[in-house]
Length: 131
Image (tube, rainbow, N blue to C red; front, side, top):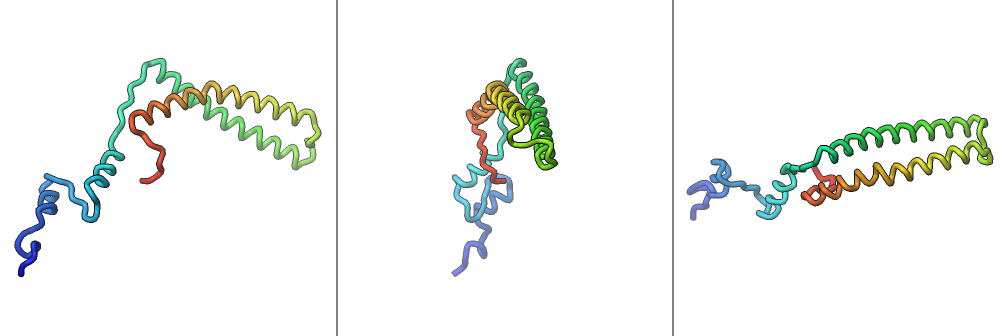
């Protein structure tokens, strides 16, 4: 008895080789299509106002993260050197102002980023990390 490979090349392999089909041994059609769709591009349409807000927000978030890092480093150095103590009113004031600033950023820049993420998810974007 002759096998398919002895008589002729498997039609799935042959069509894939000719570029007429996609054949991945061991994968179902659904798995293959999911992989293709996952790697496909997403087109997002923004108004000039929306694009400007996103660009401004990206700059602000970068600045806020840098500034927060500097504040935390200054607090660490001040506390570990003994120049600042837990009971120091200056430390409490710094933390109060930082908290207010971060809450303000969350309300403004955070809202812009959340809107962008919601729009991207609506277009099929996911935040799974599989490559």
